[in-house]
Amino acid sequence: MKNIELILNVYKCFFDGDLEGWAKFHTDDFELKQSGDFPHSGTFIGPIVAIEESFSKIPLTLPNLSIEPISFFESGNVVLVHALMTAENFRAETMHMFTINDGLVSKFQSFDDTAAIAQSVKTR
Image 1 (cartoon, rainbow, N blue to C red):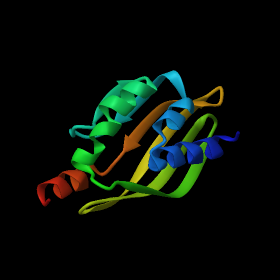
Image 2 (tube, rainbow, N blue to C red):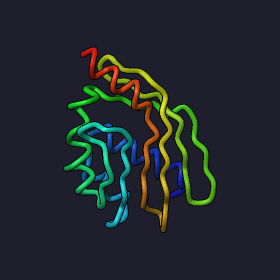
Image 3 (cartoon, rainbow, N blue to C red):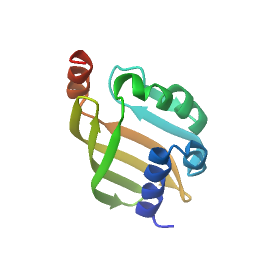
Image 4 (cartoon, rainbow, N blue to C red):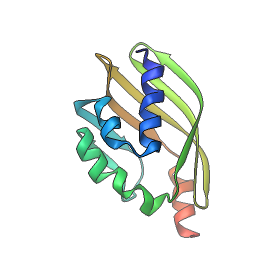
C-alpha cells in the first residue's frame, strides 16, 4: 500500500468509527501529538492510549468533528495533509503530519488553528 493510500484508510477508519481498524494501521509505539490546551491535547504513546486519552475527548472540544482533506504532500516517509476541519461552531484549515515506517503510521502531529478552536469553545 502506498503512503497516501494508507493515510486515506486511516482517515476512513477514524470517521467511520472503526477505531479497531484505525489502530491496525499504526505501530505499537505510535506517537500522537495533538496541539493546543484542550482535553484531547497532548502527546500519547500507543494507538490504544491515543484512542482512550485523546480521541474519546475530542467531542468535548469539537463536537461533530469532520476533516476533509484538500491536498496531500509526500516526502520520503512523511505525508502532510492540508485539510478543512469543521465542527459545531468551528471551521478552519489544518495540517496533519504522518510519519510512516514499514507500512504503518508511527507518528502523527496536528498543526491545528488552536486560537479558532478556543474561540469556538468560548462561543458555544
